[in-house]
Length: 436
Ligand SMILES: *Cc1c(COP(=O)(O)O)cnc(C)c1O
Image (cartoon, rainbow, N blue to C red; front, side, top):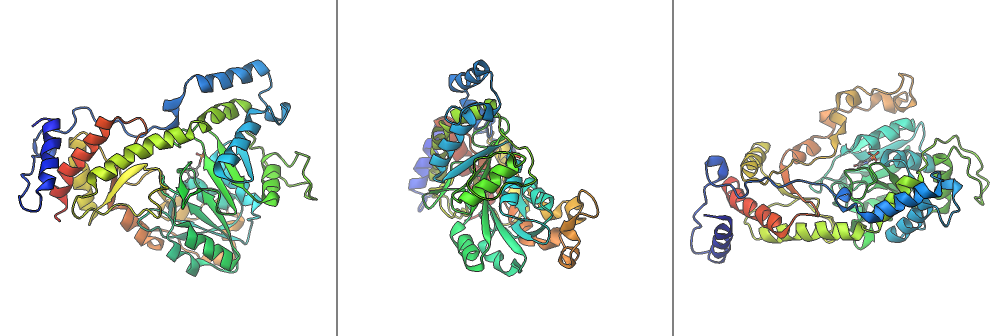
């Protein structure tokens, strides 16, 4: 049976599924004909959209002979224009370009006045930078479990709050918004700031609002694996003038004059974005809605194509309209079942991935051992810092959930045929793994 016949047969079978048992096609893993001979390519976002728009920006910077942002008048600086257009797109008052997502998190820690003695609640599954920047601030990281959205579980936050809790870090992983309403409510009620890390979800939204714009501050990474990119890059967004000023000062060794407040000095670092990066990111930002429109269209085709499969358990999505569709993740009863699905899908030429791009941080041996820059580092010297235990035991639910899911990763440049193949492979393999 060729691919078209297979699709036709599947469609026909679906209409009479109630009365006629569908003859199961032989899986490629058992010697049958694979859905695709050439495997589906896998994810790759912004760089695929590079064209003369980025080239013009770079050429202008070269010809201007002023690659340092502050050598240019504010209205002509590439970084300045990028920041203004980012703030407009993300519906915040301010945006600050920095050198990376990690830099953005470090700047946010300083802006939010996180320091020794403070605690920051963050999900057990996220990127190293989230943990490392809390440590760099001298504060104590406190892990919360994730739920089936793969993001911090709002129900696992409140009992972890102490009088020292300064910030809740809500991270929006793999294109899927964290369930922000209950998190923001906890923050407001308990007087704790909320920082959104939308590094893996640039352009996504929650109930119509851009991710990053709803907490006290938001950050993005613009590193190559993210939605839009100049290879490296980051942004801090906020609508709070004081937090913005603190962020500006910290990212520029406190040198920049021109702010109205009395805050003149802060021993900051240098995380300034240069004009080449700003130019490329400006061109990329102007394509953001095209890129996420493309990937969402492709993801919708797959969601629609598998929506009627009996027994499917999708990754939880607090706002399906707002997510990017980075991957179409299906849940299984066990890791063993997930692995059988992965093997069979790979044989069909449609590889699937476990939840990726993050780390189960408390299970990292050096984190479990509380390794810091020096043993005298303030993060773990308090009574509470000495008492806190990391390791796999502190996040059993996170480990359990991540072990059960696998997803076909989306790419904005997939053709209709690519997404049809993804649907065909899932429809072929899934029923053989999960009995309805
Ligand atoms: C990528 C990423 C970062 C760090 O960004 P860099 O630009 O690589 O420094 C931070 N948080 C999350 C969730 C990320 O995915």
